[in-house]
Image (cartoon, rainbow, N blue to C red; front, top):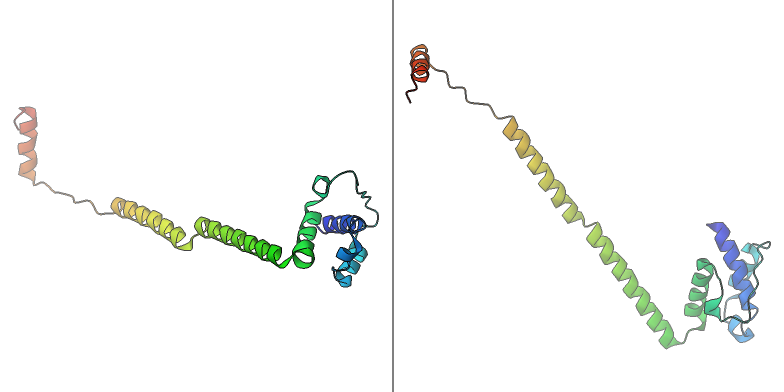
Length: 151
């Protein structure tokens, strides 16, 4: 994963060569220095000036870096507010999905229901059976009833 970031830093540095200097100056020099020191110097990336930024074949990490740069340094206050609201909404949506998927109360209820059913089934199987002992003369009478088909 670090390899992709080093390549992304190289892409960012190359793209920033085509960005107006006043916009590049809004980015802290420490960040630019970090990109330069950590970039993959052997990765060959050439910006196609005939294509728009959106049409460039960029790594996802590069797009994420530029999204953060735009939000933090280039966006107007209104744009920044809108971006932050969208990010907050997306985080809430993800949290709701996680909560629904991994709802601890629901998980325990499902487990308890399954366990209770299993326990009931096991307890029904383990109940003592009532053994009715017939007396000797009752056995003889029932034998003759069966032989003569008397109910």
